[in-house]
Amino acid sequence: MQPAYLSQIWIFPIKSLDGVNLEQVEVLSNGALRSDRAYALVDQTQKIINGKNCAQIHQIRASYDLSNCLVELTAPTHPPQKFHLESDRFVLDQWFSDVLGFKVALIHNPRGGFPDDLNAPAATVISTATLQLVNSWFPDLELAEVRRRFRTNLEIDGVSAFAEDVLLSEQRELPRSFRLGSVDFLAINPCQRCIVPSRDSHTGIANPGFQAHFSRQRANTLPGTVARSRFNHFYRLAINTQIHPANQGRSLHIGAPISLI
Image (tube, rainbow, N blue to C red; front, side):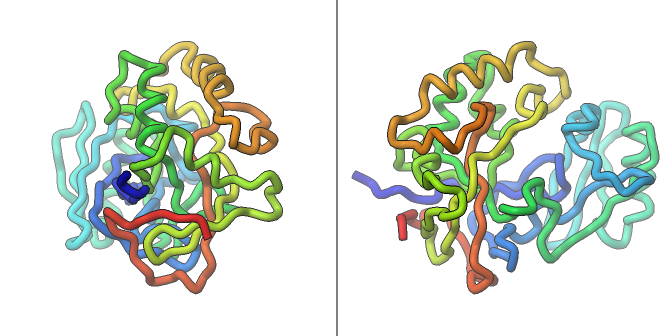
């Protein structure tokens, strides 16, 4: 049988916007992947604007030329337009403010991005089989749409559904270690989900009953080998991780094997 391996790498350069599929990526000191969530939108109070608190953001499409620090943006009311992520910052702020209908600014943190889980800011991990099983719960969705909704960084193939949950230890204080390629991770917790996965990734329109149906299916399909005590509810998918700072500068690449340490 083929050993488990890294099959997909996704980063999301501007938090809550479209992702970029990569062949390899560098790991930063906090465990984040280079350029992942490196930019974010904030309002005038410096509150981060994301899919949780602003459904309109789903209607913005973004594509990137990261080697040249370029982004092309479009929205239903705005034709495609290219911007330099640094030198066009003022114009970008105006563009986003115009599309969203309130004043926002684009901020940048190249050293670790803007993770949701500050205790586990490294890459999120999921298996391909998990996404396929979740897709079967929602037959009206395509697998690509499920990927877009759950926005996970690292996808592992060659394992069964919810194999990532098996990495979780019974005790949060004693996390289990695993190695992906040359990078050592700690499996910290199952990722708590918000309203975003229930919404169409292009329109922002929510699917009624999505969270309740997902949670029922998740509880019914949790493998017996998983530490059930780590789930105070079942609206969770993928795992959040940490790394040791010694892993800084190492790279992950498609095909890298995964193993327990």
